[in-house]
Length: 196
View 1 (cartoon, rainbow, N blue to C red):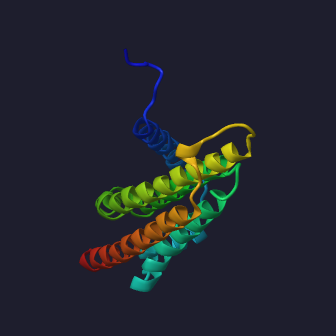
View 2 (view 1 turned 45 degrees about the vertical axis):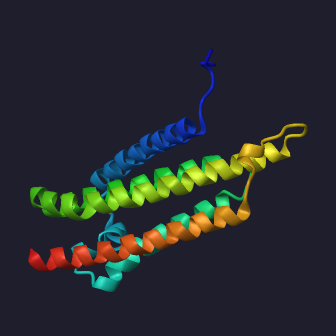
């Protein structure tokens, strides 16, 4: 007879991923609200939407890559601590706020004519970056939980033992993916800006 209380590792990963998606959506809503209610968003506009300010190819690349790299490095460091889980969740909320601000700013500057730009430029980048960031935070949670479990005496968690080498490799791969996303995003923004 199958034990109904057993949850497989794959189901745990999927449920963590889904919960982190919900957390990021909350952040997107917060970011959209901030963009709509706060008129003093010039700095955010220059950093998050350089294409709206006539940003060059390198400025567009830099805005995507630097913000994502800061996120990845912070996530990596948070995963090295036993209580890094809440900090990882806070990172996901902050990334959601950034995405919400970016989309809402494009809409507030260009109105209904911004919808094609939002769907062509923001949505693909937001989805790609979100997947990478959620994977990073999932690793933060898994690794920090492993460290926390290691601090509890007389308990064994062999299946969840922290592996620093593997942890580092995963984050290097995430940085490479973010670099590729940033290059694709800057090219797409540049092409789109030259067509409109």
